[in-house]
Image 1: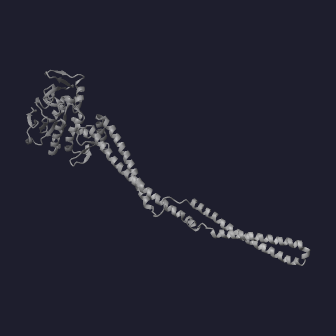
Image 2: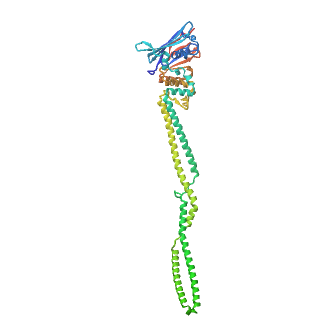
Image 3: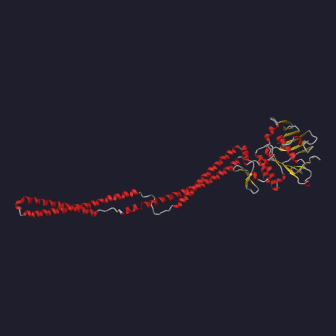
Length: 467
């Protein structure tokens, strides 16, 4: 039992139907109210709740119906103790007109004094209503359950929202990375690699420039050949002219005497022609020598390169694209692996956030808009999807999560618990410092008599039920 958790040490009823007077003393860590229908088990639990929460928590019925015949008022008195030390006494007085609650603090010297600020205001601070009706809380919507958890742990919602946003962002980034990888794989499957090619494309303009330069160079040969042809024509013309002169000379030899001066001039002309012819022949020989020495630039390989340039460059581009996409794919796959690890890290961060919130319920987690807890098959299910028996062990931790000062949890029906769940409830109650009050209806009187109040396995008293 937690030293700071208050339990009910004793409960006394007077004039509450069906009892004249009953006292339950030295109540232990667990209280079982056992008996057949009609012996007053429900009334005791109702009075326990009404005393700790006020008349508004009682079932909707006239107050007079809670009074035993012959009594004008009824009294319920509860001692709340921290361990064995009584800290507070709570008194509920019921009349046909009203029900009032009084709380007194008990000091070490045994004296008591009413708590300041009003009894019900004080009780709201130390009592959590969930403890009295955990099943009702379980039936709330998922959103209401989560919202209430967040109300008691305000920082948890902000941290989980941030974690959820990060998880969505990283998952979207990883999905984008995986899609990129698939596109790259498809692109790679469509490309073909051609071995033996250079890394860079050949520039068509460069090849055309080479062809132009070769043609310009080769034009010199054409010019030389034209020069030879021109000189040959010149020689032919000179030969023709000389022949004409010779013929003219023959014609004029007869008139040599008369034409001496003219013959002499013609001889000079012939000599000049010979000189010119010699000069032309020497120029021709020089040009022919140049032709012999001239080395033409090969044009055919360049023209072939030009013809195959486009096809080669396409193959080179494909090679480069294939290599780049292979690099991109490797980078994309590495990014996908990194993002997967990041998703796992974000999920681990969520576990740390839940752990740091210090919710005192082993296994409780906040899922997508709902509370999750492992069922008997260790599958994570919504809290509302647990069976009655599976839920009660959780209820102790759930009540403790809201940090009440009074550690009580009420189990409406003992038969919701099988042996395994009952043992789990006992272990959870011990762990969280809770005091279960269990309602057990005997199916036949032979099962246990007319109604005994049992605490911690021992009979406390037999209530004085109406005959």
